[in-house]
Length: 246
Length: 241
Image (cartoon, rainbow over all chains, first blue to last red):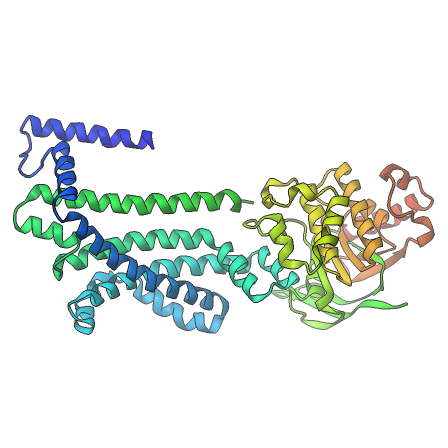
C-alpha cells in the first residue's frame, strides 16, 4: 500500500512543478494540493456529498436487482444444457455491444427518471457477473469435486450453497468486482446526459459553468469511491484464495 | 458365495478406442478384492462404471449404487470447506460415533483445518474414514495410497483394515502395486490391458492373513507371498510386452 502510493506522489510533485513554473495553465490544471483542499471544502460545505449519495443509490439498487438475477441464471444455465444452448448465444452476441448505446432506447422505454438509469446500470452489471460465474460453475462441474459430490449425494441446500456457490466464489467475486466497477462507469454516463443530481451530473455541470477545479474534485471523489470497492473486493478475493488453492 | 457386486459382460470405448471388452467379475460379499493391472488398463474406469460416475455403454452391473462410496486418489475434499464441514456434507452418522473414530485415528485436531493444510497421509485417512462412516456396503478405493511413503502406507493400510473389520463392507480396490494387493486383499483379479478383461483371479486365502497387518516386513515373510508376487509380477510384465 505504501509502495503503491509513491508513484502517485511523484506524479503529484511533477504536476505541481509544472503549475509552479507556469508550463501548464493552473486554470485548467490546478495543483494537486488545491484540488485536495477544494474537494475537502466541497465535501464539508457544498452539496458534493449528497451527489455521491444519489449516484451510490442508483448503483446499489441496480446492483441489488441485477446481481441476484445474474447469479441465479448462471447457476441454472450451468446446470441445464438445453437452457444454456438457448441463453448463451444471446448473451454472447449482445455482450460485445457497449451497453451505453442502449441508453436512448431505455430512456424511451423507462422514461427520463431514475428507472432508465437503473436499467442501464443493471444491464451492464448483469453481463459481467453472469459470464464470470457461468464459467466458474462450468469448470467446477467438470472437475473432480463434482465426482465427490455425486458419490456422497449432497442435499439440495448443501449442493447449491456449499458446492456450487462456494466452489465458484472466486469467479463470483471477480464478477461482482468487475460488475460494480463497470456499473460506476454507467452511473456517471447516465448522469452526464439526463440528470439533475449525482456525481456525473456534478462533474458535467461544473464543466458547463467553467468551475474546472470542481471537475477535478468530482473526479477525485469518484475515484475514491471506485477504490473503496476495488479494495473491498480484492480483500474478499484474497481471503477466498487463501483456502481455495489445493 | 453371496455376491454384492456382479459385473456382467461390460465393454467400453473412448473415441473408438476399446478399453474394456466383455469384462465380467463377481465380488464376494464382505470381502476385500483387489484389481491389479498396468497403467491405462482401465482399472479406474471400471470403478467409475460401477459407481455410475461414467455411464455404462454395454453390459450390466448389479449393485446398490445408493450404498456405495468412493475413495479417490487425491483432491477428494472440497478445498473451500473445512474438514469438519466436508465430513458433515456426506456422513449421516451421529456425532458421538464419529468423534470416537476420529479419536481412535488421532484425527480430532484437524477438524477445523482446510484440506490444503493437511499432509497427504492425514487427508487420505479422513478420506477412508468418510467412505466407511457413510455406512456403505461397497467401498471403492482408487489407488488412495499411491502418493504416500511406506510408513504412512502401513499406517493407512491398518486404518483401512480396522474400519473394514468394524463395518464389514465389500471393498474393491484398484492398485498397480503388487505388495499392496497382497497385504490387503482376499482375492486379486488381474485386469489385462491386452485382453481388455479380467485374465485371472488369485485367492490369497483367509488363513494366511492376519488382519490387521502388524508390519509390512513380516507380511512379506509369509508362506506363498513370494510365489503369489511372482505370478502377478509375470502377468504385469507380460501385459506390457
